Length: 329
Image 1 (cartoon, helix red, strand yellow):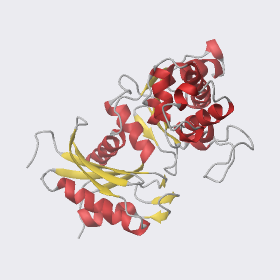
Image 2 (tube, rainbow, N blue to C red; image 1 turned 135 degrees about the horizontal axis):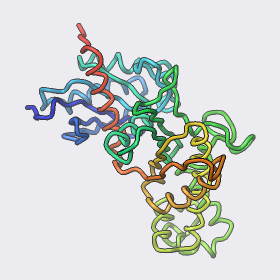
Image 3 (cartoon, helix red, strand yellow; image 1 turned 30 degrees about the vertical axis):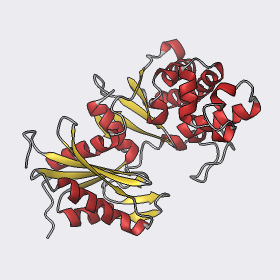
Image 4 (spheres, one colour; image 1 turned 90 degrees about the horizontal axis):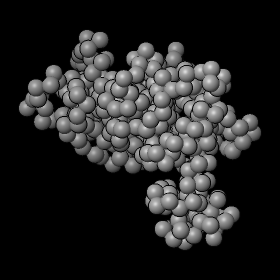
């Protein structure tokens, strides 16, 4: 079977609980997909990625390449994951393993970079060549697009925006440092902030507490969003505080990179104007140079949860066009 689209590529999203592989056409449309549980044994994950690719491509005869989005530090050759705390990889040659099993060219990319690229090519990046995307979810990742190209740095590890130190000697971070911006501007930080504020003033938080189990520890991000959409003052204040931190991050990064577009993705990005408005206000207030600078446009992501899949598939397509196909014997 084939489709009249110039060929398909496969994008893979490696998650903590599931591996999703999808065939994607040049327009960014997901044609088919499969999901396989992520093995608990990290040594089995690469083989399971290859299995997912083989399953999703079996009905198509024109799959050309594979792109894998994986959390962690990926080398300059887009083949080896140098370090990934979860699933515990150290110098894992994911590209070689998947390539050997599938006999297709394979590109490995940091998952946030892949999502940023997917958003740039097929989503909020329309009309821009210089874009910064922040992925505010469980962590704070991101990707940098410069002059229409994904900026990866000399060693392939640029874009780790969650791990610059925003607060010296601040909150501890799983990366081993203290005060990383991830601990203040991520979706997880937003939920933690809501719980701490609710514990400090449970009467004011009564509306949102009633959406959970009645305790601050039972609050979830979706509860805060639901109550804020209903106009609850407490939850709107939570968003205002999270927006100030996220806006500060955008201003810090904007001062260095000077993009024309800032995109908010991840779980916080999914809340739309609830986070975009306060983040943009805070960004404009915090940007060095003030009115003498040109402010970037601030948008929320539009592609959705498939951005990483779609971005990885497109990066694989570009790689396949630039380099001759790899033949595995």
